Length: 317
Image 1: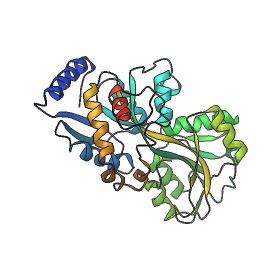
Image 2 (image 1 turned 45 degrees about the horizontal axis):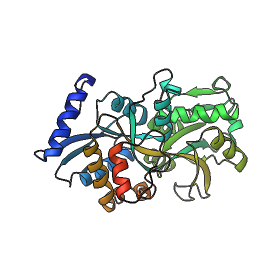
Image 3 (image 1 turned 60 degrees about the vertical axis):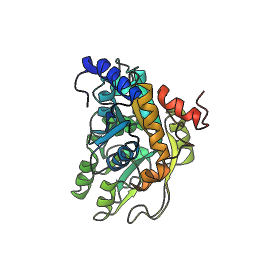
């Protein structure tokens, strides 16, 4: 992992020389998320797959997910990271938690799979629509997280203010724990399906997932283009036996503009030429396909990735 931004240019230049000469393998790290989420096992499978190329040696590292990962990449402190389409858009444009500091050096490598906005509600709360959140105890995601950013976007679009609720900033485990202790009425989780924290919660508590009607979903997608409609299939979690319509955002792999083209080309090529190994690592990874790799990108594509996609017949222009 790169430790200081001041060393980034020099180290990237050295990697470029080593890859070009094939004298040594370039060592790269992939920032993922906690071991309880999807990022980490999928990231490990991707690292193993791309390391089949003798010019690459990749390792997956635990991380603090999208916002923290994006900052690490922008500072050149890690080479590649998992992020979300919404967080990447906010970072590149200097919005939301990146207000006033656009990270214009962020580049995308691939879109992976949808991360679903799952709004868990207790059956006793009486919450059946977003408007019912007023006056309730609501877990919004950790402060400054992508989950909290999505929650804020949804509430802003629907004209619901934080001060109309008892808001609590909680990570996924915190949402699950407070539901178990009857300390919240609703909680936001944005992650691939199924989410381990919610699988654990639904084994001990009877909860529902909030479903959006067509009119509300239309408003959300129009105001927030990174949202796409998705469905949590019936039976994904114990006790939730109906399909749930809800927004999702794409999980992305990102890097920064100074990463050598050859390294990112080899990485992208290695990932998609060993896709079978990646797709068996986690249920949601089955959604990773070459055909969808450039759909929903919210920052410019890195030239190395673009080069591979062109060779594979994918239009990136």
